[in-house]
Image (cartoon, rainbow, N blue to C red):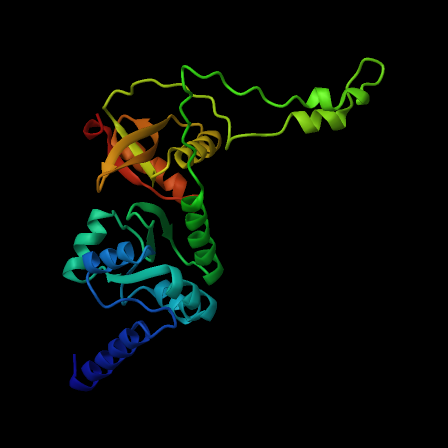
Length: 282
């Protein structure tokens, strides 16, 4: 290669690299390590958002120019989210991308205020997409859990006030008007679920699609996934930082390749998960 041609080629390469160089954004990403950022999110009771990035990622640069320049998103994240950008080409980036099985860019992970991974996003996301995801996770976290109150054995339950007595004059030809039924049959509780509990053998592979701190939330998601994908749905009870968590796992596959194929099907629906060896979930 002649010297002029070499300089020309070098210039072209530099221009290409500059074109893909990350730009400053309205959304503020911390310039610290993973552990420090996550600890700050936990201490400030905020969501933890990780954006896996690389200088060669064209879609990442597109998000820099559009999504992360959105002032509404920037304001929301400033109040509710701690954000970290991880370069998969760095030493630490390689480690974290392997640990969380990042296979495509951009990949974004959202951890709840307890530090549990609850959402994985792959590909281009708009500002409204991210705000919707953040608000949904925070709404689920705010859902109150219901703790049954014990009933004293030596004290009878209070007799409920009868609606029928107060509506005696509303009987017509021995019947009861529909309006009265609405007064009597008021919905209660936070959902009704059919439960079938069977001990699952710790063998094969599954795809973990979420980690939840509230049992009600995992039941709701389990019902949704079970109806949509018709796969065996498992709940793995575990402990994280001294608290009980519930891991939602779809499918029981004989080998990792089959589980990976199902994971690819999930990705087509903009859902992702982690392939788990069920042998360690006894």
